[in-house]
Length: 313
Image (cartoon, rainbow, N blue to C red; front, side, top):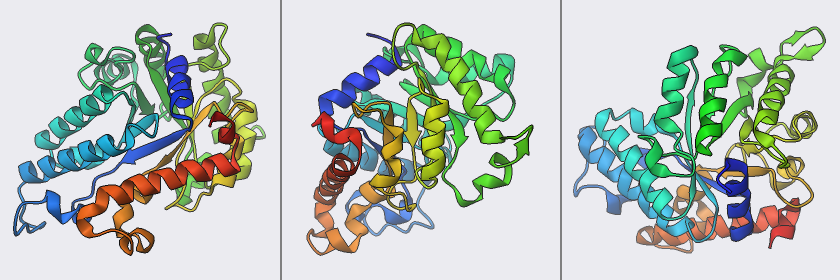
């Protein structure tokens, strides 16, 4: 059971939910307890900031590891800090893997030929975290350069038991500028979806799902339902829940009748829960981890009540 889809669904069944916690550290929102005394964000060294990011994300991991199957570190926030930040990212990924979580590295890589292969070999460790430098179970990938640029990711993911999530329909407000363009009666995102389904079929074997996934935003529920029908064998990564406006009812169409086939991501709504009025009134600033746990449990309950995930519990 080393293929990504099987490992993903085993983790989802084990935890009884399909919540993915996004690790998107922002210096101006970190708990004060994790920052140096008298810290000034404007003058803080990148080394100190990277250390704070690592501490914060590792403590988030420790809170959510018993509760959810997946975390998704956003590479950009770490890369902004240069070498210190990328080292922190690697350490966070390793910590999450050692805690038993699956890790989707959200780096949105994509390039031609040997360059795509290099990206894939760097990030996609799959079942064995020591197989790749970054050690992730899965990676988000940009398909804009064409289907041939996806093939190296597919091949290495298959070889290592890793997963790939191709951007199909993203959750940002301006997504339609390109993704809604119509050619031969079909939108660009539908064309990408059909390509992803074909690539995924290469990895399915006798399984219901393959290891090539798709990113489909919660902010377009009708399109989410349509894309699920176009990609019946594709595991979905669904961003946009919570802070971006997507609801549990909006993401229900991503799942099959058994509550499988997708994970739903929440980042700010969980990791910075202590800043929300609901939790700020209940917990002291130094109890921010309790707010993280409560927000995670609330999302799990919300998905269970309004999606097929309820049958997992």
